Length: 348
Image (tube, rainbow, N blue to C red; front, side):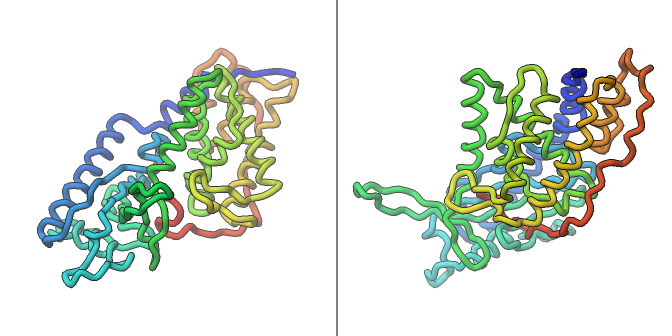
């Protein structure tokens, strides 16, 4: 069986088409910092208490954000308040909705933005004309006694009409701990991060991203089923996808990494959509197992998978062998379309 080594191609694709450019990263940091300044100034203007701390979280903090041609990027920046600071002027505790509304009012205190901040189910969102948006989930910090009588902090997210025990920082720590654990052993944790980003890029094709599952669910699936392959990101990606698809064929339920709830339940429409997209991709990549597979054929297969011309356009002596025509084999049909709720499930 022919083994076409496309690691250099996959590395180049990750570098040029998946990873955010330094200028984009700098722009996002600037917008995040500006958002924090607006929150601070707005709360000061209203005479309201400041959060004890503000923490970046999600894909931004895990360094798994991927390029998007529509600049559809979200920066998650959680605001953590002492519970006693989330009260009205009469000393009555704010409801979860009132807490989010206070943060929303602070973000639009000067009326400078054409697109004002708005309250979502799990966060407050500030959109930017360029396509970016900052999501600010609102947490309250509650101090309780543990079994030994020691003070312990608990974090509750203002979600809908409820305060839910949650802390997205724990999700970030979970992911980074997994990377660090691999790096301390025989496997390459940085490869797992690359495979996570490549999988998210695959799932965010323009005609799929509204229908497929969330980034945290994809990250959990990659970590649960990651197959390391030293020096071969192309093989690691395909083998990891095979493991994920096999697991999702059995069940679409995906457990949350840090709390006792699920990211997705059995029969989840978005996970089912993602599973079927993976099936189509893996069917396309079967051409790599053919004895007559050439580099040109392999590159055309990866182009089809990622909906790009990047692989075939790379210079290579084997381009003279080009001539295969795989056609449009990445069509997903009869998949129920469903959209995630704004802010739903992304904050741990």
